[in-house]
Amino acid sequence: MTDSPLLQDRRLGRNQMTGLTVLGLETSCDETAAAVVRRSADGAVRVLSSVVASQIAQHAPYGGVVPEIAARSHVEAIDAIAAQAMDEAGLSYEDLDGVAATAGPGLVGGVMVGLAFGKAVALARSLPLVAVNHLEGHAVSARLGAEVAYPFLLLLVSGGHCQLLEVGGVGACRRLGTTMDDAAGEAFDKIAKTLGLPYPGGPALERLAVGGDPERYPLPRARLGHKDCDFSFSGLKTAAARIAEGLTMEPERRDLAAAVQTAIARQLRERTERAMDLYAQAHEGEALRFVVAGGVAANSAVRATLEQAAGARGFSFTAPPLAYCTDNAAMIALAGVERLALGISDPLDAPARPRWPLDAAAAAANPSHLAGRKGAKA
Ligand code: KG4
Ligand code: ZN
Image (cartoon, rainbow, N blue to C red):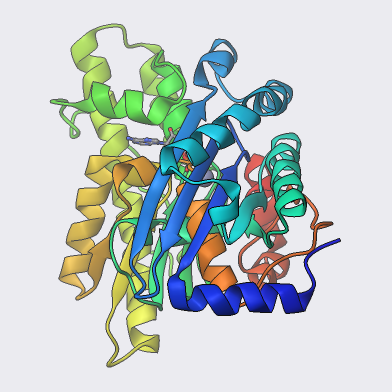
């Protein structure tokens, strides 16, 4: 059962004038996160608290996320993390206007934990529930640090996703490109593993690459010249793994790390430039905005390369503050705020969804992009 539409309307009517304050919950992968975000009536967004409990140490011995361990660990942590987020925000549940929980895509055991917790809070406190698409959370994450108006071109680049999307507004996404195999973050993680670096590999590889010579090891340039906006990282992964096998000396490993980082940044730039050209044609005479989001957006070489590409094509460039690039609940809370402001909420029987593409039509039309591990999140 959920609030009657009338009760929700009254609540939203009141808060459209005073602003909206939402508790966000995120449990789709290996972070148990809770946050409180407030958007005032004038549109200003403030993160009142953002707590992220990483499970990295529990998964590290296995070199990647183990779904059963993740789900169990979310169950153990969610109570205390949510209480801490409320505490740090200095609010009680009566001060909230809604609860937003990630409902997918992701590891379904974990998603169910956060979503069930969110439903319990919504039911107990008579609050509207928003079942948030994790990708929509990433899509709005840049708005936690800067004002970015709709529409914008989004490169969503994380451990589970690598997509170019035209974001027209809340829930209005058109996919321009996606990965044919691995996501960019996954490529970082797998190549880092072959270099003997700990999980998650992206940040470790970035640290190793400092001062390295990116030209020492030539790596393949996948999809160069292709007219679409799709990505592929498997060739790069294989080539880098072959080179890494023979390397033991630190300077050589550093050079390979630099070459890999440069190659990934370059492919992200080349595919994004194609999407920028398409987007610019479709939005002639309008302000052109580009946003990069997701864990890989924390990489400074990737950020710099994309910022340069955006500048050269007349796009503004926005990336989320570093803390909101990787998974967090502030972005889920903000997605909840944006939906509630439009009067959108979900029933208490909203399902947890392991697969939930942002652009369902594009995903259905091109099922080859749903194959493999990335399928669950793409
Ligand atoms: O957004 P996120 O926390 O989770 C998903 O939704 O997938 O992204 C995690 C991914 C991991 O693959 C991690 O290695 C990568 O983002 N990542 C980085 C960096 N920080 C995180 N990759 C490259 N450089 C970084 N600094
Ligand atoms: Zn994510």
